[in-house]
Image (tube, rainbow over all chains, first blue to last red; front, side, top):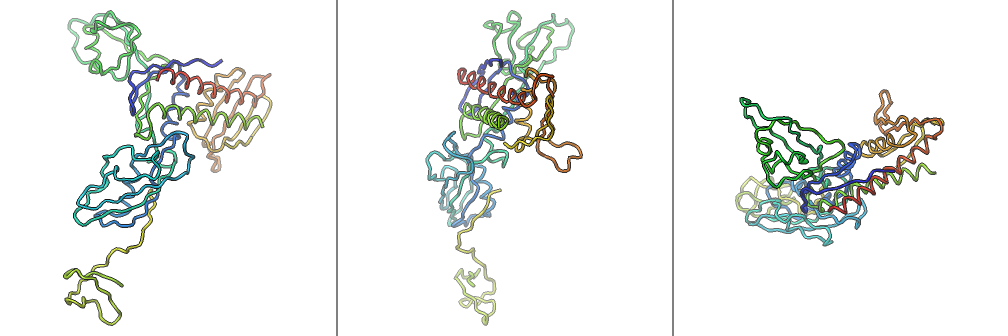
Length: 260
Length: 44
Length: 94
C-alpha cells in the first residue's frame, strides 16, 4: 500500500549527519523537518533562583544565558512539563562555565561543559538554583533540539557533450550531494555509477570532477538529502526518530478520534 | 535601612533623624547594597 | 487533538483539527491525496474573513461510493504506515 523507503547515510556523526531518503514526498519530508525543529522536546532552564549574584551582570541577563545551555534529554524518560533542578556555585576570580552546573538528576546535565556563563573577578560570586523544564521548540527556541535541519533534492549530473574549445573556463559551483551517473567522465578513477558524492569532495566545483565537459544538472524527484545537526541534547538518530514518532502519534490520535 | 559608606566601606544604618551621612567618617555618599533575599527570575 | 465537524455530506467533509499546524496538516493532506477514492483534499489555517478562526480546517471530497470520514481514517492510517516504514528504513541504515 505505502511505498517502502530507502535510507542511505552519506555521513553519520553523534551530532551531525547527512542522509538520503527515497522515495519520499516533499510533504512528508517537510513534516519530518518541521517536527525535528519544533516538536521534539528538550530540557532547558526556565526558572532561576539567585541566592547570590555579585557579578557585573543582572540576574535576568544570566538567566537568559543559562536558558540557552543545551541539556541532555534522554528520550522517553520524562513527560513534557516535567522539571529537573540544577545548581551552580562559583566564586571569583574564576569563569563560571556550563560545566559548573550540578544536576540533581544525572540524566539531565549540560551537553557541553565549556560554555562560558560569566567571568567573575576577585570577590565576586554567583550562587543559584535553576529549574529546567521539558518543552518543545514551538514554545521557545531554547527548547529546539535540532539547530540546523534542512533537506534538498539529490542531484545528478549529465554529460551532454564536450566543452567548447574557446568556452570560458568558469567554475561550475554546485552544493549538496550528487548521485554519480557518468562515472566514465569523472576525474575520480574509483567512481562507480550510483555512488553518492558530497559536492565538497570535489571542492563544490563540477569542472574538477568532469573536466572539459558540457554538463546538465538535474534534481532527482522524490529523493531528498537531509542535513541534520542537533544542539547536543541527544544524537541525530534520536532526533529523527522522535520527530517521526511525533507525526505518527498525531496520526494515531486522529485515527482514534475519527473512529469515535 | 542598611547602606554602605562609599568612602570607608562600613555598613551604615540610617534613622529618620541623622540625615544622609555616615556616622563613622561623615561622608555623604552612601550605597544601597543588594538584598540578601533569594530572587527568582523567569527565563524568557 | 480535538476534532469539530463543520460540514458533512456523504462525499464531502469539512473538519476543524484543533491544536495542529502545517507540520501535521500538510503531511496529512499529502497522504490523503495519495489515498484511493479521494478526489480533493486541502486545508486552511486562517481562512479569509474567518472571524478569528486560526485552527486548521481540513476539507476532503471523495468519489461517490466512498464516505469522506472513512477516507480521513485511511489517510491517517497512511501517515502511520509512512512513519513506521521510515523508522524501519532509518534504523536499518543507521
